[in-house]
Image (cartoon, rainbow, N blue to C red):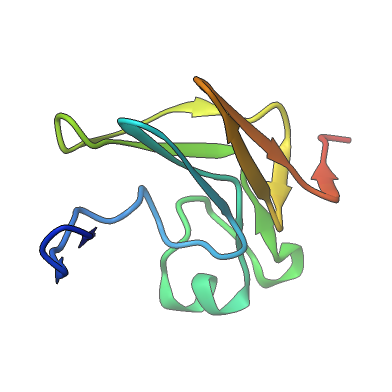
Length: 107
């Protein structure tokens, strides 16, 4: 985490698991990291949380990790309405918005 006042970096606990092409947005004091995917490299490194085979990658997630800047705690109980990668985000007042071109719905 970067402290803009002091110009110093500090470490935080990681997200619930490694993934790429997720979206991030701040609605103070909360920061949201949503969706994303775990491609072949994640799976080979053992970073995925699901039992995955090489035949079904990339695996796309609907998980939302929320960092509370006041308490310094993470929460991973929220989910998006669908599995999304290449997520774009925006905030307006107390609202966070998440969108993506790709939506993965169960068959």
